[in-house]
Image (cartoon, rainbow, N blue to C red):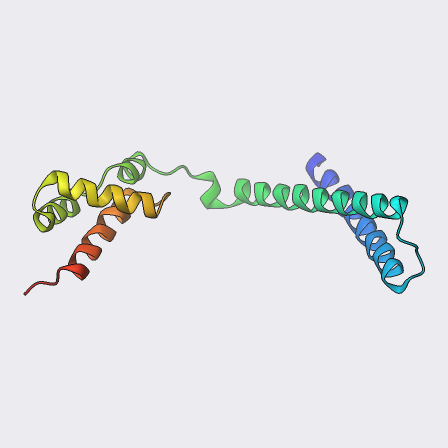
Amino acid sequence: MGQKLIISIATAILLITGVLLGYVLSQLVLGYLTPNLLTLLGTFSLIIIFGTLYYVLFWEFRRQQAQTSPAGRTRPSRRNERNERTPDANLKNRLTSLAGDTNAAQRLVDRVKQDYPGMPENWYWEKAIADLERDHPAS
């Protein structure tokens, strides 16, 4: 109940602020308001309020959706978490055989990690294999 009330109040304030901001900006553009320090600060404060409420409101929506969705409630299994950090043995063996040795394979993967941060570990090994096969096609 409390979160729904906060969302309702934030939505109402967001709408009122949006209307006020639109009105002030239209009056400035049409020339009915003179651009001075007061109108500049007022417009700036409306933009800050509008942006902050917009961010907080949609952050709250996203948080609620994550809590209520089935994907948000289930934790990834330990096996999936482990696979995110360690490469598949088949990929490791394949890249090692293509590169010549383990150190060369690791250097290729490290270079791919620098170019594409934040990807799963297996992706780096697959990308290094694809790059190596592209650069050195089998004869």
